Length: 411
Image (cartoon, rainbow, N blue to C red; front, side):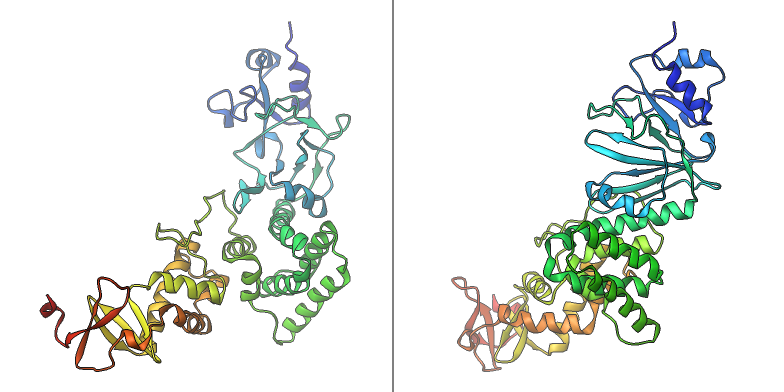
């Protein structure tokens, strides 16, 4: 007796697809060496597809260059139709309709993944497999075609699909800000256009991106946003000033801008763990995306090492407070911010939006703004250079105690 999956698997085979058995309610293959699996005849269907079972399909060359665009993020589902080419082969499940778009391309690649704090979208080619309809998703929902009467994949190219996925990913991270920060939309449109113009993105792609986000976010001034793109690209082509990368960092934060940088530079990758942004000392990256945040972070890190009094900086060495020039403090700030940016970027300080956090302007502003955190009343430090400042056990600040001498003689 033939299994209930026999016709489904046979239909997929007739469409030049290569089905493989998957574990029931799972995305895991049910066999070893699944990348090399082939169905020789109907007996293989009865042998391998024994209920309960899920059905997967190999993507890439084994299925006549079949490519799957897997849309994972809820906001990416909203953005995807603006960028993906049309195809009849679309499927999903009740909570994520139209989350799989399937095509055939002449020369498939392997896999490209676009992720921020979670996976956004993947393009799956050689060496991958996708859970197909008539399977039960791990959530318990049935996987179903959008149109079960016609699900023939349309043709496209690997370049078009990966470009669409890139656009979907960027739109997905921008969409929440565009939706809730209505007063920032003009500035955000300018900053996004400038950022992408500098990275040699095509104006038509940026226009399409901004137009899609504005429409999906119910932006009441879409014409203004498109003018922002036109004006920015015109100014950039003429060598005139346009918004800096730092404006985009101010609006989105360093981490998201870092992701966009990697996507537009062609460095999309698998999902990675999100960097910690705690201001504590647990080794995670600290927020330094604004002058104020950078000043607070610097003050917290050096609260026990620096003092500022009457226009003079002091450095605490053991119990001695030594006068130091402001250039010394700026040097400390520079190395501190370099360390933080390295944590955020995973050691890649060449990521251009992160480099703006190490500018002379940012460092000087952080040092200047942090002075109030280090400021000490003059009464707390004796101004006589012939005396030594020591820590008062009852106070957080030094007090006058004895003639100046070496730290070793203060015991």
